[in-house]
Image (tube, rainbow, N blue to C red; front, side, top):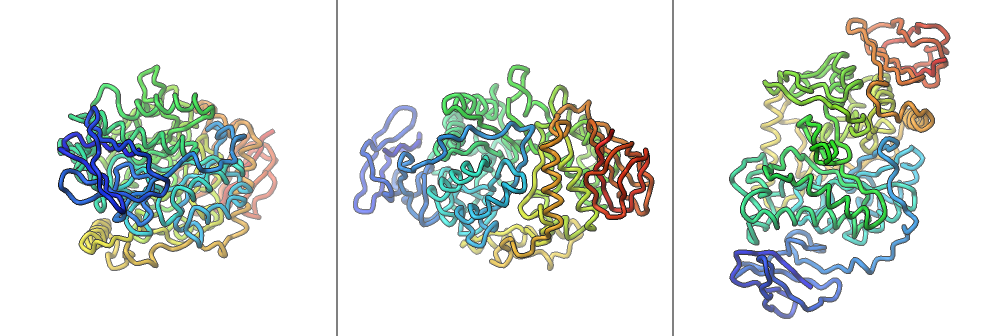
Length: 568
């Protein structure tokens, strides 16, 4: 049965391959075709006398955003994950973010499956997919999706995504899906033809905001919440990463995120497995991840850019853009011991006080990372940290992420020191839009001092580089594998209590020591070898052969090195 919300329409028809027939008006602005259509039936919808358009809730777009929608029977797939009980608790999780189109040579959901044994051996618990909702063309990041219910046709469509989720569960891996509810892409977005999905009362970087609190917003909110429920229920996805929730402009008494968390909690009870919501937010507002009983939205965890920025700026020395707010070991120590650097502190980059303290929030409600798609791909050249710092600093950064009190997250290839760029790429057929994106990125990066002529063309197929699995650095892979194994073995490394994290540092000499119970992580990021107070114990991991077994209170650490000690 086809149902579509179009409250202002005078008439609605469904356009089938051999016939066009009217839909019947139902209550609340809905229109229906009560006849059951066979699976894989292709169709479009016509609003009044307008052109035939894809269904806003299209479950599949076999020919892309410009083609017809196709019906899907979600009951037909033969799942083999009946014994799957859901993801591990977040305190013991390790998240691995990947882009389906470039993670494997195949560039499909099935292509990811071939590498699941690698992820399992590494110590990953959650596989996070960048957005897969239908977007223009065959390649792209996915953040310009326009048909949010349809898994991307070039990746393998609904069946391919289900096979991937089923295979992940068989391998003991949870699946996190990145969803984008703060905007839709500019090309192929026809929602406004159906109803008041957008409002000009707010401005966003992408144009009119999604209408979450104005007239007609009840069904707009329903559109996004039903979408979230669909991924979790029909595709057996375990968690959603929600893009840039600070851009969800909603003054309702019950914020969309709180409503979403409430409904996902009810779904979790029904399906009998844990379901997790992990937003991205730059507000540094603890209400996003606080329990609803104390006035929060009740989401499970969120990305922590403060930790990333503090660590990145110390390792690379960069101070441009938002990195101007960071750059000291003191900032890194603050992030490690209290979560956010800006928790009511003046931000020079923003020109105002930013954030509020995390009070009563465990550290595992934050994801900590040295790299992710944004922090690589939104650089002019899409260069990774491995291409910018010494090997020793790369290993030190990995140790601080893996042994931090946060949930560690890696970006694809990071575990073996990948140096390939991950630049922003698109596949728009609209040449005017392609030119605007191309020139816009060059203009923006020129403002940061980068040579615009060196910025990769997003439309060039070569910009979408496939991960080169032949370039694996075995020593770096072993380092990450041992770090994650250590995290599993040592209970203090999954303890989310901030008061159990002690950090000492010397800003001038350049060393930092993080202590978590009997585990001490010492890093020398200064220019010369220094004595670092690690206490008495046994070195279990070291990045430099010149670091001897520790038995003294102070250890000589070479420059750009790290050692992990189990204290007596």
